[in-house]
Length: 311
Image 1 (tube, helix red, strand yellow):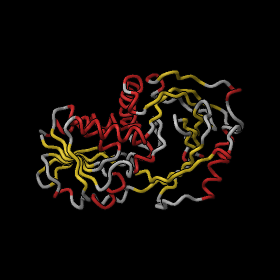
Image 2 (cartoon, helix red, strand yellow; image 1 turned 90 degrees about the vertical axis):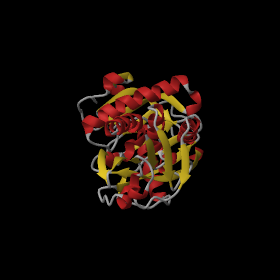
Image 3 (cartoon, one colour; image 1 turned 120 degrees about the vertical axis):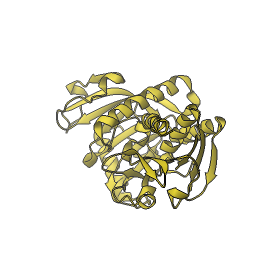
Image 4 (cartoon, one colour; image 1 turned 180 degrees about the horizontal axis):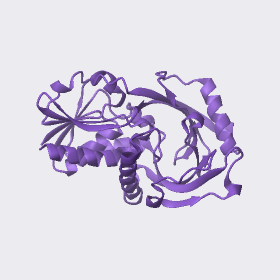
């Protein structure tokens, strides 16, 4: 079956690879490719964040964790590394449903929890170095026979193919007239200092993280809903650094080497469903918020299943 994937971020490329593995002919059409996609500036660590529906996201997340863990062990050039991290919470909560499906999960001892927090856990998760991962993913699809076309899609009905897979992220506001899709602005800082482990406060109002990569450590963050500003803001830098220092007091501001801004495609819940438009199957896969990488392979598996059912 001829499948056209619209969008070349992590969701689009993951779908392309899975469709190719299932034996389909695939073309990816997008107005931008790596290194110019939103995915290229993602932090990025596996962790369900700002995404719904929770039950489906848990399944997609587990499937993605398994694949990223495999890549970390078997395909080092993909840029996936397993790193330990700690999540801190300001209240005692139920343990996450995915705790038994990931490595090295444990409850933190009281002396391991910073001031201002009362609960937390440690876990081992894939850190995905997007400057390596995105080119690798595109190259993998290309080696499998995927073709790529640089084009701005204005109407899904004009896209060629037997099936269209829509992975346009924020572009769905216009392409699908979906006003539910809004940006969740994320500003991050790069620092040449390794915290040893990741530190996380994943609550939207107090969002804080240190993500150690092989080249830099990524500090964040912000999740400013409805904010389209792509310029770095000094006041947000100061906010991020103050929050990070509360979790990592040894941070050395003299080792900051840069930063960037990305716009997460936030939505009340991920739209992963089939629509029949002008007699043709369109599979929508967008609105992943801050969990595009975290859900990528699981969502791609479901896309393949929906495409197969439409045959």
